[in-house]
Length: 291
Image 1 (cartoon, helix red, strand yellow):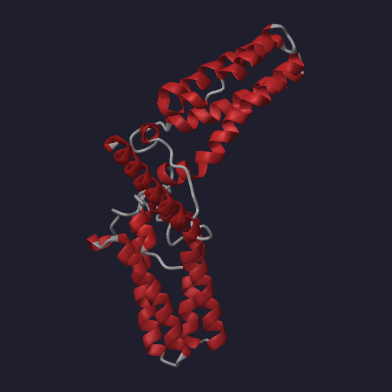
Image 2 (tube, rainbow, N blue to C red):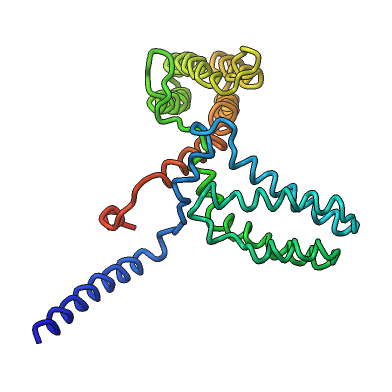
């Protein structure tokens, strides 16, 4: 009798916990995006742990091998077909050792079907079986490609510093304030303040360029500001000195696009995704957010 009560209580507790979790999840149903996180073991095949980006090159080879097999199956070229199939087999099976957690996802039956069809010169069946094998790739890509790219291919700016040891995020925030300071000042007729903020912005962008060159090395020349941005900065300075309100706004807008938006479209989006996917989430954190 006591065991019956004990088991009953356990079932009740588990039921309450599961019910609460389902209720909370349903409350946030319209506000939460669920994404699958790749196994940590894949990290060893990306920079900085791996200098050769082995995972990426393996994926590139597999894609090329699939195309080659399709080409030679359509041409009924058995010799080249089997050569490329041998390479595909090796790289496809290698996935299991590179990321053991994904071994069950490999469709070895589809691979065997491709091999059997190729061995018997059933070229149409080769293409059909290859498409079935390719579904394995699409399945993994649908689940993991976006998150994996964000976690392992996006640059990590969190530890970067600019001249004087200032953290990059603080420096970028200061640049943003200076752009807005310029706009506010010339809109309100405070031209001297607008020019002072412009000079600070120009200096700050030059300092930022010293950080960008670490990755974007163009024969020792700063990639930022580039000639187009430098020209826009010169136009903005001239507009702030002699232009009307409309020309000042237009010149500032061009600088903002070239100096901020153009780089943010690549780096900030990728880095924000990297940070987001890399965070450890829990129910308590989720419940603290109000929608």
